[in-house]
Image (spheres, rainbow, N blue to C red):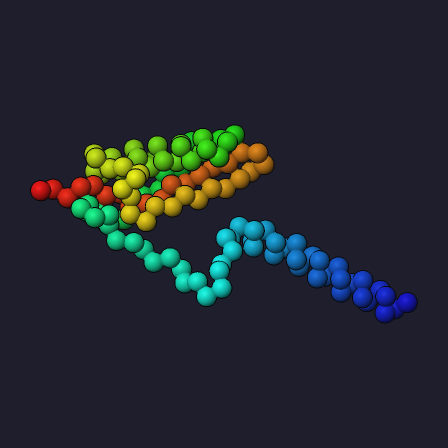
Length: 120
């Protein structure tokens, strides 16, 4: 009987640690074996870029992820256009979108370095 109790205790400890680690693992995208982290890309051809990345998120959580993505890009564009009036999300250097969920709602963050066409 003591062996069964100790085995059950070990199983409960392993299950508790798995539950504690699971949220952290779920938040990270799976890494491919032997894959190196993505290297920052250079500016798009014919464009010059700002020296730092901007982040846009928009107000609050949205009921759909698509709305949250649109709000993040809109907020990012407002900040980018203050630097380069002709900035566009499509010509951003190293663009990425990070989203978090809370229940049925999501909030996204558009991150990237604004660029604009080189003056001629």
